[in-house]
Length: 159
Picture (tube, rainbow, N blue to C red):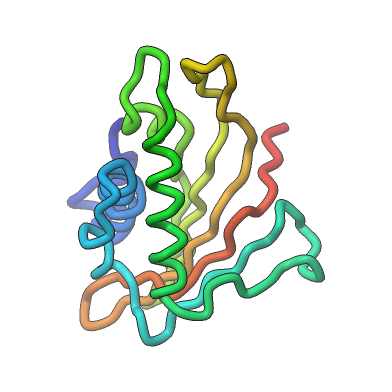
C-alpha cells in the first residue's frame, strides 16, 4: 500500500496518512498501544460511535477518555489476532479492508476519512465483511497532528 500524498508537496496529509494507515495497522496487529499512544491528545479526546447510522439521534459518546478507548482497542486487537486468515497475514487482512483517500485540512484542524470495506475469508469458513467509515478529528499542536476524537461506525455508501 502506497501513501497517496506526496511527502514534499503535501507533508501534513502524508504524515496523517502514515499514522492512521501504516502505524495504526501495524500497532493493531501487534496489540501494541504504545506505538500509537502519542498520536492522541489524551486531555481532549472523545470517541463517538455512530451505530452504523447516519442519524445523529443514534450516536453516543462511547469513549469519554482515551483510556476507555485504549482498553476497547486492545480487546479488539486480541479478538482480531485470534482469527486465522486464509493466505494472508493479519496485517495484510487489515490493509486489504482499509483506505484513506480524503484528508481535509483547514488551518490547524483536519478531518481524515478512513474507510473499511471488502471481504476477508477465515480458515473456519466465516468471513469478515461489511462497510463502515471513521472520521478522525485532528488538531495540530506545536507542529504535531494529534487525534482529538472520532466519529466511528458510520455507514459507508459505496454506490
